[in-house]
Length: 170
Image (tube, rainbow, N blue to C red; front, side, top):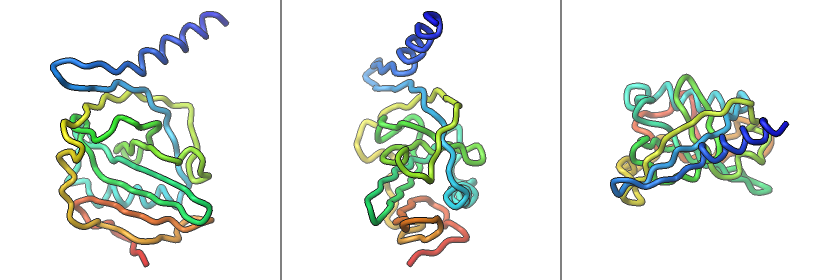
């Protein structure tokens, strides 16, 4: 039992190291994997398939921010570069067709998301400016309200180069 507790403690310390060198802030994090209900997975899959030619998973990930209120859900997705992240405040990931969506916000509280036992170590380098290199999109590729899942609708804002196929909003 002591070995397990010590092992968990060492993994936690190792996975949450934040260190600075060469004037760059990097974060070496261990994130828990989450899965989603099929209705949301299909949307995320469409995001990946509609943008395969633009975002290579070795250089890019998708930042997924999810928030809930009593009457609404909101979902924001935008690509980010591993070496130019706008934030280090992610608390989970979703793997869709080999592309990672790093998650933050209220997603853990919503029934659309459920945690698995998989843990993955990711390395992010914080951007030198708050906007980051990729935040030059003038218009979203998909924005509006979707009623694709049970429960309250989802207000989506997805900023990618490719148009998200198979979805339209009201």
